[in-house]
Amino acid sequence: MGRALELAALAAAAGDVPVGAVVLAPDGAVIGEGWNVREAEGDPTGHAEVVALRAAAATLGRWRLEDCTLVVTLEPCPMCAGALLLARIGRVALGAWDPKAGACGSVWDLVRDRRATHRVEVIGGVRERECSQALLAFFADHR
Image 1 (cartoon, rainbow, N blue to C red):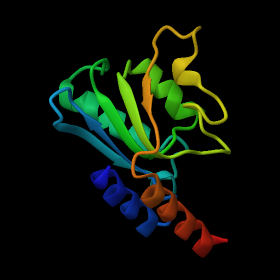
Image 2 (image 1 turned 90 degrees about the vertical axis):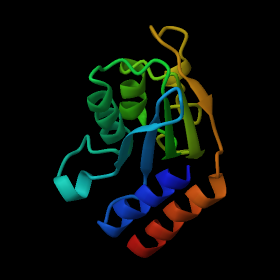
Image 3 (image 1 turned 180 degrees about the vertical axis):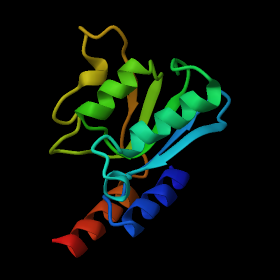
Image 4 (image 1 turned 30 degrees about the horizontal axis):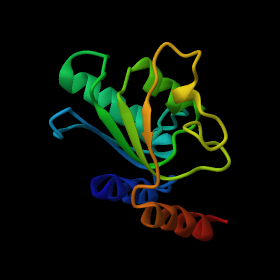
């Protein structure tokens, strides 16, 4: 989560919501990283999770990330939760819960829906205070 927080700071420095994500291989090696690039790239899909998943798939040369873990500073939104399912990610470790748009247990629970073809293990609240503080500080400066 420490590296994800560093990546979130890069997003904030570029004027985007400070969210950072890291994909870990089963052995713990970092195979993908990302931070929010929506503002920098004008891309509505430029969420940290999507950027990190794309990087991990490129590193491995395949789209299936079954035994990998996504570590992210903020609970994934519905789009990102869908990407986790489609990538067959094994687990997500998240920092702050998102009571407005979270899709891993807060508002929705897409990644553990019994109707889905794949389910993702969710580990929540990892360094939650630090992750929440980064978001609160960003929005205090931007509102």
